[in-house]
Length: 308
Image (cartoon, rainbow, N blue to C red):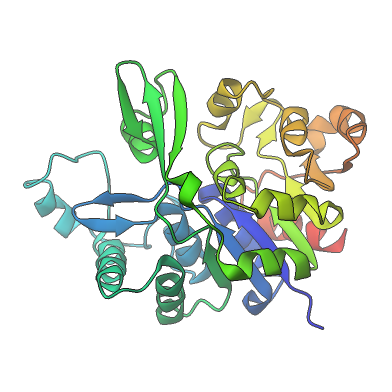
């Protein structure tokens, strides 16, 4: 039987690891459950930021400087749209907009998110099996002083500066995993928790009915990569969300947060002094260079994880 690897992924942090992994393992052997809690409707279009980042990465067309969108994209349509809409904080390139127009059209034709994702992947030459965490609409709403905003607005417009007063995964109670997700959790050779935000990327996936319980039953084959190095997030507002959930901003804090389903944890070698603390939680812990500064570092980390 061919070994298959199952990944739980958010956006940019996961994409970095996946770029390394796709140079080590054939895409056809990858099943990737992607967070869709960041999904948002703008300009009348259905936009799935994390799904698109992972798709474009696997298609080798992502803008590697920005970490999202198409490489060398233009922004002519967006310039005109801003004359009609007061949404100057959100950037979408012309090629990126084509994806959202196609996705929205397919929704109107009656296809669900999983089916549409497969169609987009096929058209872009992606052979990995990308799976939205659910077909139902889930939106992450952040309460900040005086208002509530979508996670994308909090991240991009407000640059995650306001204090977090609340986090609501709107629609999560109706969210169900597609039939294949629970089956893939059982059959995967290894399950990899990508170095994404434990609260609003991985945490959103885990909140979908049945997924966390299924992982708990196979924790001996669940491997996580710490998104925290030296007490700091590698990228984004991870620390802020961890603090709001009373999770220590450290690899130990993340390990405790994942304890119920995590069998193995890769932390950065700079945090090696914390290895014993994590192992006392019953989690096998490995130290490696997990800061993926370039393609070689991404490939090295992927190769290390596959071999252990």
